[in-house]
Length: 277
Image (cartoon, rainbow, N blue to C red):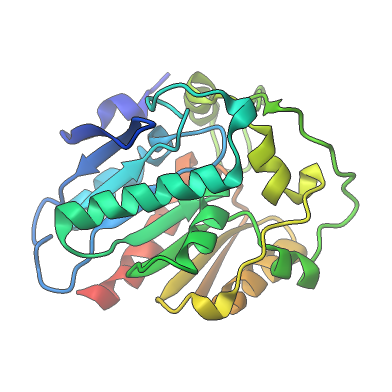
């Protein structure tokens, strides 16, 4: 199995805050100090960690972007915690802490790039914290978007105190090879049931309310599109925060980050980031 996390370019690592959040810091290869170019902060989804960005990071470094990848409490190399006690608001605090660290190091607020659970966390955080921009990659949706385009025909399952890691025992997906899935299986871990119970409609959540009017930074929404509802939901999410939209038909949720077509999302993000140059 190819382990992309072990192929990352040279970078700095540090632990921040009282929960020893593991932060990986990558410096752009050229021009990252040009006036107006903000740093990037990558926020992973449930069950994962900064390793999930392993295919993305070299592209942003090559394009000259300084990038940091945070690990929420209890994830990847962050200090272990009691997941039965972790709530959605705790993860919000972790992201605020990471943003403060990035601002401390760079002198400017970052563009926050959030995937899945990291996307709904980043939206909620953007209501009250200054950031330069917001990119959502197949983000978990807020209550308002679910009201507009609800999930159909799925019986909610109540989460336990801890949600076990997905098995990912399939041989391949629409855009992931066996090797892509094996990479994920190596690192996937458990998740907080309380956090899931707050935002996941598949687990019977009421959902997280996001006031799109309070998100005033430029934004981009990228969605994996398997059917018409996926596309409608992605467009509704972009409208809700006043952002641009890209739907990628035939891609999957995790495939957007580690699959065979991940570079399509990377290319769109890099094009969108050109506004800051």
